[in-house]
Image: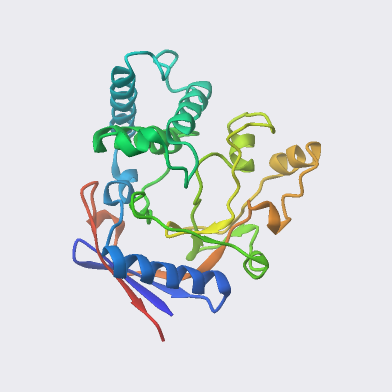
Length: 268
């Protein structure tokens, strides 16, 4: 199985999917989503790393102001900006507004598209800015209005990995909340109410550009102090590889306004 991706009409990459249950679930899910909705990617956020730190901070400020104005109260913090505590408080606010991944709420039912997008901006901007803006990369992000997920089973967990490998493709985080790694990096308590590890195959994926371990020694010591086995696949914090990829053009060809124009699923 293979996936050919084009951006702005330019062939960008080929993904060569593994012959494993996770990759097969991913391929089947993407076929279902594309057959039903077309290329319903969240193009803006697929290319969000092409924005500068200043532009992302402006988007975050705009989202906070919009939401506070809508509710006529300071629902989200506006002081001591761009610290980890500030990001943590914003993410807690996002979790309260958005609720769980599959939760249908009154707010979601009646809110305008602008309000929903600003709520999503809180989450996405915070993750982009925490611990410093990441290098330019292309993310595969599906439109959250039409997204679907498939639960993992025992066979899927058996293919989990504790590494990032060069030119490999991994499932993204298909939840609303923070996983155990996030709690460690963001200095949050182990009983954080928004803890959600990854137990679903979803459409969002990550391209790895380097070889490195998933966990560092300090995180593993932190896990030991909380009686957590970081390498237990059932904990849902390992990587889930679905294939390898070959890049066919430079990332410099694209911009924040780029769009995924082809996501061809080849079953062979």
